[in-house]
Image 1 (cartoon, each protein chain N blue to C red):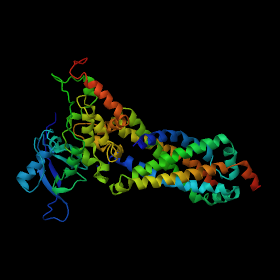
Image 2: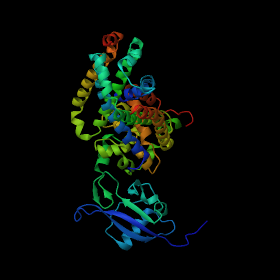
Image 3: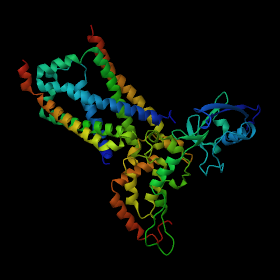
Image 4: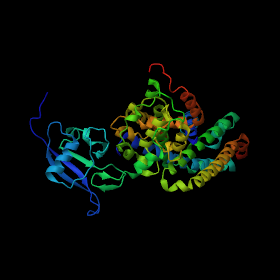
Length: 261
Length: 113
Length: 117
């Protein structure tokens, strides 16, 4: 295993913008020593603590679960806490970090995520259980879980939403993040309102605005598939009443053991 | 928005129609005049195929235009007007196109000579 | 996120689609000369058969073929779980479209050059 012999210098180019002072965003370059195992977030910390305390960015858990640190690195959206610095510098050691695109900038690398959260609220992203709850727990089969394609792993980081060209053109588009959540809840056997959910996403600014550009899949740090979710919702929207009927039937046996469970 | 499924189905049909159209009409490339067209379109079977092709392609094109225009969020309040306008354009184009296909008759060719 | 193949595919698909839709309406109008008889039709066909128009025809062919193959790629991706191959599928679709455009465009080009005085 080769060790880092010669210490390399990285040039981190950060987009800065202070609306109180600057007319428009500009790039500022910082030089740092690349250390073994340094992530992009480590680089930002180093710059903020050692060189320029005014650099502003969001971060929290630093292990890809809180979703705070999504940014645009060399033109692609990603979580900076889990990305090694050395994988993103070019042959001259440069890397460019900008805030998530298409969203208003609050300061430096921090963007205004209001439209992201509004669209999320719009799909009612909470479980709506049936009125008659079972005495014991809900029993859901492994197949039913598999059908949800890991959608519950979404950490609401905003990388997909901000990568989507449709969002760029149309802020009323519900967005891949919310549609993925809607998909999760619609397919959940414990949810009693799939027809209502399908109505919400069948809005002209809902599933029909997706043009299968796939930027969302490219951007997702958890390798989720909003496009598949949207496609499934489209198919279900075509038979929403039948689907709700199926759900009602399923919920009659929700407290009974399922095969393989 | 069942327009969406319709868009997909017309797309599949168009792959076949377009391939047919290109091969039958445009190859080998040469001067296209009335008699060359009538050789084919004089036959009522071709007339039916071409009119079906016309309807399918107009549907796909106008659905596609609608889809593209309403992506722009400023248009959202005028969605119905846009749809109405495109439907009118589609019907007029279809009627005119179908009438054109029917006009390719051997009798009309005879009138030329 | 602009330089993704997904974005390029979308932009080209939309651009060719809009161009083709507008061309369609024009085409219906041009061929509509037949409603006024064979003579009128032949005159109009002469007018749109100049070498410039033939070159435009080749561009039109490129637009149709690209739009069709990118569309077919989408239909495949939407109905079969091959999302992970979407980029290579775009390159394949683009390559096939380019090849077919050349195969289809060359006869037109030769026709233009051959008959051109």
